Image (cartoon, rainbow, N blue to C red; front, side, top):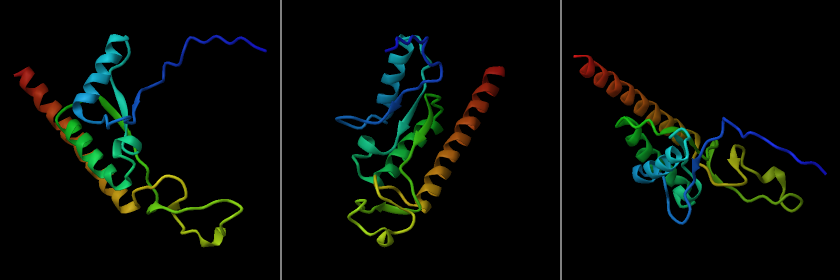
Length: 148
């Protein structure tokens, strides 16, 4: 038996995964960050583009990313990262160890959660990169206005 005490983990962060409803939209992100601020914590978070936020439909991750990218491009600093369910081949395949033949598996396709495929992954990463570039450009323009 042991009693362990900790001062906490300064590197923890909140991940919005959705719940009864998706929570990746700007209003949900703002509400979660307001709660973080009230608790004296950094008001930034990560968004899970899969699971309940995509209504457990892997292809909807692209819509979630589009919304997040729009938030970022408009200047939001609230979202510092995303989680994607991604693999080489889209979808998922069933596999039960001891029951199914491993030789029947499709290479590069998930045997757990359904994923977006590699090409869609490249597309959403490019979309997010473009959003970050737009945010940086906007921040630079705002900074230039403030100086002028």
